[in-house]
Every structure is written in structure tokens, then in C-alpha cells.
Image (cartoon, rainbow, N blue to C red):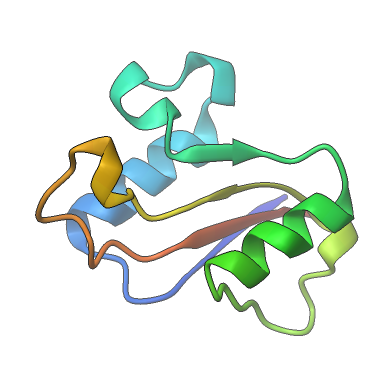
Length: 92
């Protein structure tokens, strides 16, 4: 079962988040694939979460996470999306 936790996601962000959550990351649209940080370990996910100040509820174990979707960064040339919220997807 997949549960997606999101904070202050816009309608656009939610639609894209659901799309990413239901498709393989490798098949994600190129324009959004660069927003996805693949994690090789729980420690790497924790570092990404710390960097982006991402939080999740206590029943979502760090070891259950496979990837996080981070906000687009200004250097990616995505003006207007700086409010797009981070999202964490858990598999349980």
C-alpha cells in the first residue's frame, strides 16, 4: 500500500505528485524527473529531508521511504514554483 504525505501542496503539485507516486520514477516526465531525488539508503533520505526541512508523521518509518520529491530549485529555471511543497512517499 502506498501512502503519500504532503504539506501545503498546490493542486498542480498534488496532481504531479500523484502521477509520480503511481508511475516508476524512471518513467516520470522529463520535466519533473529532475525534481526526484532517488535515495540509496535511509541515511541519504534523512540527509535530503534535513536539507529541505521535510517532516513526516511518526507512523512513516524512515526505512520505508524509497524517494522524496523536492521543491524545484531556482537554478532549475522554474520561477513561480518556489512555494511547491516537498512530498514524501512511503511504502508499507
